[in-house]
Image 1 (tube, rainbow, N blue to C red):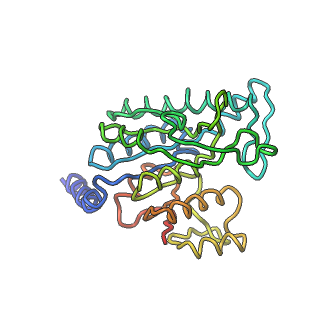
Image 2: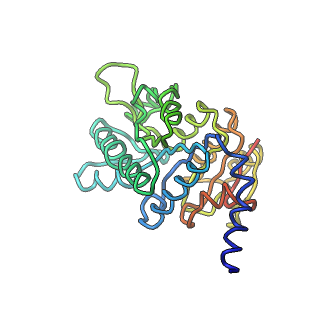
Image 3: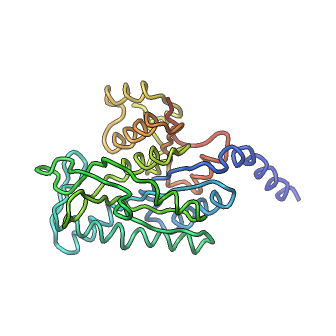
Length: 283
């Protein structure tokens, strides 16, 4: 009987957050171990289906850099990175789009549907959802920077009762152009701003933002975040994530979270509990 009562208490603890975020859009950038571990993939899908079932509106934006690198290696295609971003030649662009839009996106959709959800997968090219220009064509090729987001297609998917799953490929303003490979963190940020999302979450392979003693920084504002970047506390692969958080906040999103995707049901722990996990950044 005690176990049953504990279950009820857990549900009651979550109730205020279910009410608070009902009908709110929550953008979730899905990547890292959570995207490669079979157990974590199943738990991720369960979390998203639960949020959707209780009335929230999750939007998934996924990466897939490791899968792209693995296939490029298998095909004997060279790939290189500058300042942590992939240099996207025309050949790499074809493979990136194939992996992101054709493989990973549809795997996530199937995963959500198999857990009882209703998901639809799209890329940033669909209905010109994401429009981009070159970041720096000479140095980065077809790696792009988003110039415009047309959220109508995502809003239509949400209004029809589905969970949108977005691959970070953008369209170009010219005909016969292969499109652009987009950093998924910044794609998620731009989409969150355009949709006027309540929250944005980034799943990572660390606890969150760590200080120089490797202790978790649970709460940050934009000024503190910029200071930690300036003194080197925040560096490496965490920089684009905090930059995407800051961009989203300045664009009107109320809170941004960087959480450990290696934890079981990390999304539910962040959204439906008072303690939360990871790092919360806000204005």
